[in-house]
Image (tube, rainbow, N blue to C red; front, side, top):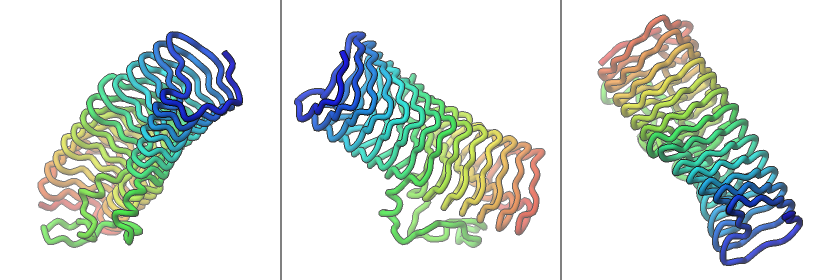
Length: 360
């Protein structure tokens, strides 16, 4: 069917449910206030939704599952109770140039073996994470999206060996919740004195570092291994990228800049690969590896950080080769508190204090 310019509202199921290999074209409808999701697509159905509004449901704005597909272009998906967009169980839709905003949960949730291609969407002001990718077998593609001003993480890849490809996205000014938790902290920097004997430590004890670790633009954990390339991750309220708890993945040619804390943090058995990234203007360290964090860092540039360009602590053991560390406001590279690691063929120059400082 062709369904256009209708107002579909206040029902006790889905607003529109397309299933069993059905198709259909849905244009310029307002679909709102249903007790389930506004739009459901399942069982190999492949509709086209263009220019619709899906809002104010008790479920999701768009829910694709059980191999549902479909094309969603230039829709407004807003103010839904669950994830504004939810994709799971082998569903594989395409969403392009949609505005996904002001949800009470995640902006986009891909889980339980979901796929999907998300291109040039605006994902903003979610009450939780902007984009959440989780569970084994989940592998969506996010290309050229703008992900900003969400309350929690911008992107969270977690809960099993989830994957996903993130290319050319702008991820910025997320972690809005940090402002309400610590309203008087315009930025959080690295200090040069600490009671535990380490040269570098957090400035203000009223902002626990564990709290900062929960506020980052990108968080990858629990064995997840996405590929992230050519993204811009910037204007971070705390940390730009945190890989932890056995997280992995490949991070290539990203721009990571203008953070109120560290640029990249690797901890607790994580083993990512960072290649050819530009990390700059961090108010903490450019790269901080600690608490048994591992990983490979090759051909990255780390510039103009308030803290050390590279900071290694507490049994960290990364391999760092052919990186450039320059113009830090203190030491270029610091290894302290029994850190390990291999650093070869790096260029460490024009830093304000020592090139390399090793202390335990």
